[in-house]
Length: 129
Ligand code: FEO
Image (cartoon, rainbow, N blue to C red; front, side, top):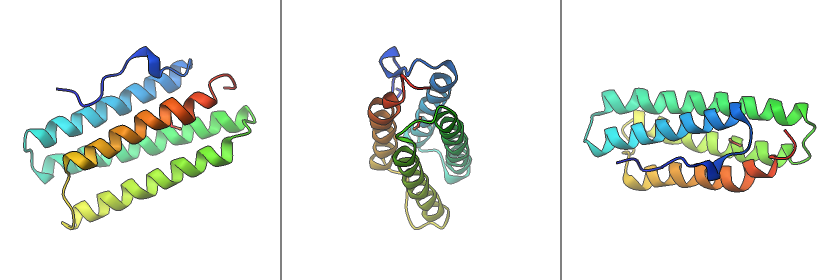
């Protein structure tokens, strides 16, 4: 079962961003499903790598749109992106080194961060970009 169900209430009224957010939701669900099925590191690691790669790419798209629109909240928003990226990259590093495991708490952190970020921070630029 999916850990995160996309609905239109998460829309920021931008087709490109909405489709990227949906893809992130799919990737979190894929990672959660693989983890729940007890899949090994050899399968979880590439999914986590893809999630990080796609997240960075999404943040870049969003930041470029905000800059283009001269969005006043750009700096604050970018800081949130950077903090999350650093945290997830650190998690991935520790996971690869065998210093941590992927748990339901980790999955909930990823899901909750994304939901909160879309609903609070991303929606703030809704009328601007
Ligand atoms: Fe959609 Fe600000 O991340």
